[in-house]
Amino acid sequence: MKIIMLGAPGAGKGTQAKKIAAKYGIPHISTGDIFRANIKNGTELGKKAKTYMDQGLLVPDELVVDLVVDRVNQDDCKNGYVLDGFPRTIPQAEALTEALAKMGQKVDYAIDVDVPDENIVRRMGGRRACVGCGATYHVEYAPTKKEGICDVCGGELILRDDDKPETVQKRLNVYHEQTQPLIDYYTKAGILKTVDGTVDIDDVFQAIVDILGA
Image (cartoon, rainbow, N blue to C red; front, side):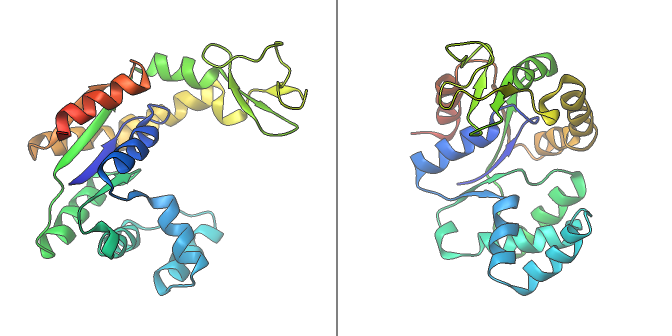
């Protein structure tokens, strides 16, 4: 099974991708992990990616697709894989479809973990991190025993800049602009499946299992 996970930042697609990988015994592949592995191993593709990343530039689509295709060609992907965080744009999706077709492969499912923006803003805006030990909490879902104080080390808790509502909303706007069109793309391809990401994590996973089959 070759699966692509779609969903806004904070929708929980990474969590679900890990659960799918564990249940079906297929690798969970994130572009971040691929970049890190190639850079660490000093591969030709890794060196190319690093020149962009060192300048704070986005790695070009063509190179990202090369890295992903190289990864899915490895032995552990013979029975399938879960792609998390890629593709992000229509050109990436088209390039991936084309590259897989050359290998006689195709994506079987694109699963969209659907969560309304206001839920994501509330979800991420409620996160708190300890300045001392880095432990993370949530004011609603995983509160500390004493408000504002870390259970682990007694340090002060803060709201990280990237979890502030205005930052989250900016990230969501970028997502809707760039990645939302992928939903139409994979709907046309006949492989899009949508699950409700607002319910409990285990219920979201059960909905995915119902789609993929036991």
